Image (cartoon, rainbow, N blue to C red; front, side):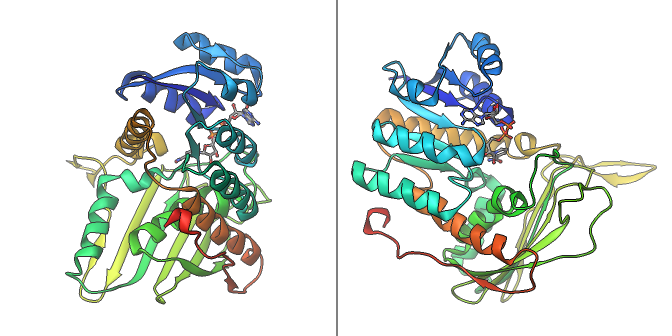
Length: 334
Ligand code: NAI
């Protein structure tokens, strides 16, 4: 059975997902598009022969739509996700599930009222083969316990609309989820260190910043978030364990050597760096929808990450270590 998908938010990643779903994901078809920018929705829909819906609610209610992919602006996610849940339709929501934990709690409440897991969060790094190898090394116990993680999240540039909070709840949220997933435990506190800022930034941004996270066991994860580094999209992760380390290496399959030295290509953006991860994420989600099952990260994962983001945002601009406030995990998400 083909999974007929409605896309809410046809901007950068919405269009990239449409491209993936239209060519490289088996058993999936994008049949509907909604965007508050109606002209954009019309252009994108025309390119794939999909129907344009004036509102997210109309798209969700349409009988031609089996499932929904939310790729709109973060603060708009909650309303669309709750509407999809109330219509009983599976929904893959791009991160953040909601920029604040409160919004995620309301989504979890709606999902529990619906009585089944319908929400998957777009934490695609969980599908990256190299991150998967790091997780396997940690779980093997071969190198002892993980003690420290050094993360780097570097973007070439961001638009002026990128707010200071987004460094935490839109960018660092990827490392926050990855740390929970790799280490298999929750994050209990956050601090934000503020090095000298680059001159290549909008005045309202602290760029770079270093988010310092502590987990339940006392492991510490550092995350350098530098969103105007210019040279490329460079994601690094090195885990220091008791008797060794394991780290992501350069993603390019080749190294060029010539009179100028040895070098490899650096990814240009998230679609480039995480191409395989996005495909695997979409394929797993669409297959699960077709089988009437849930797969991938849950609303609880979206909530737990958002709770850490809330602490990080509160810690920004101070030198304080802010505890993460979280509810007990409901049995529904066990
Ligand atoms: P974008 O600004 O390029 O596109 C967002 C689109 O959503 C725009 O076309 C806008 O008109 C539309 N929109 C905004 N509010 C809406 C609403 N209420 N209803 C319908 N459409 C609405 O942004 P981008 O980069 O595509 O990001 C979208 C989401 O995807 C964000 O939550 C972002 O954090 C996430 N994202 C995830 C990435 C990943 O690595 N997993 C990478 C890039 C973005």
